[in-house]
Image (cartoon, rainbow, N blue to C red; front, side, top):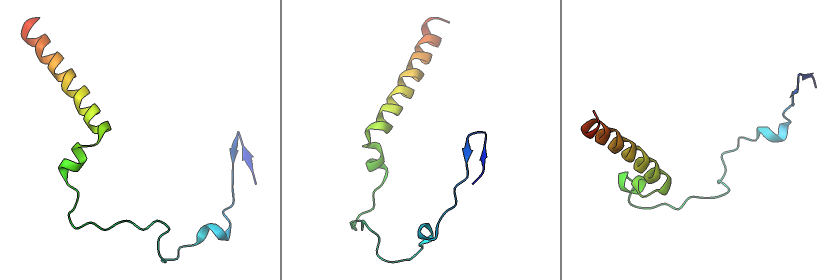
Length: 68
């Protein structure tokens, strides 16, 4: 193994190359209806991001209306 300025080269062993198509370790639960846009909007990080973007746009609009 060569060490070049802090970078360590690692050799991947044969145990890392298992590409079998057996049953997955954690099978997913199959639902009848697909998740759509409303499911995506119910996620808290997305709603926080959209709220921050909306507040910034509102502040810019109010600045343009009342201070320019």
